[in-house]
Amino acid sequence: MNFLVVGCGRVGAELSYRLFKSGHQVVVVDSDRAAFNRLHPDFQGRTLEGEGLAENVLERAGIKEADGLAAVTNSDTLNAAVAHTARAVFNVPIVVVRNYDPSLRRVIEVFGLQTVSSTSWGAQRVEELLTNPVQKMVYSTGNGEVEVYEFVMPEHWKGLTVGELLIPLPQCYPVALTRAGRSVLPRADMRLEPGDVLNVSSTVEGIGLLAARLEKKAKA
Image (cartoon, rainbow, N blue to C red; front, side, top):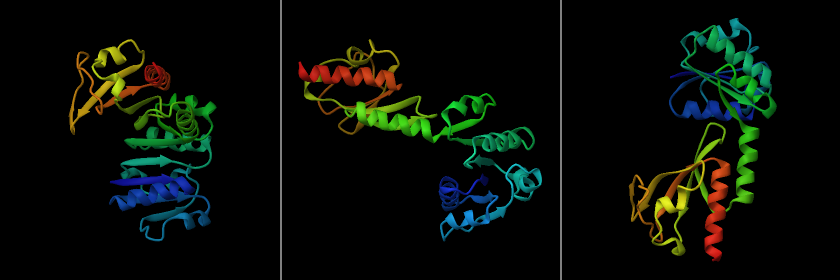
């Protein structure tokens, strides 16, 4: 696939190299030639010095043939403008925007653009690790609004059903139950055994309630 990466900061350089290593054709655009020094020495994609918002620069970068574009400069407004141009003018099918300032995130999302907010997501992950150390997050969607967590069932939950564990909790849904290496879709009436691995899809609020319930049961 053909990808354009606008912005060659730390994220842009890492993203470009990862895409290249995966076998894709990559063009990196940045207004500062020195920024390309951040690219891995093995990177063999194209680099193009120029303003990422300039249509002629985007055309030279091959945007008309691009399968996707990532706008990852250090400016939220520039990222939004580049992404909107890629979508509205050049009809690029996949457009992703990096967001720094959480207060501007909703403005970018109004345009229907896929947004990755490193600030919001990073702060949420630190909060989870500080306040809910019991569970392990294994998959995150969007910017962390919904995540999949993994719980290993302790001895004191033996005999309880999945429904008794989760159904009273809002925003908390069972995804998979693994026992002896075999996974199934969990039913509400399935009884838990020590060592079972239960994957739960939840918001931060929901998983906090579940963690509190587990901790309370452990102390009982």
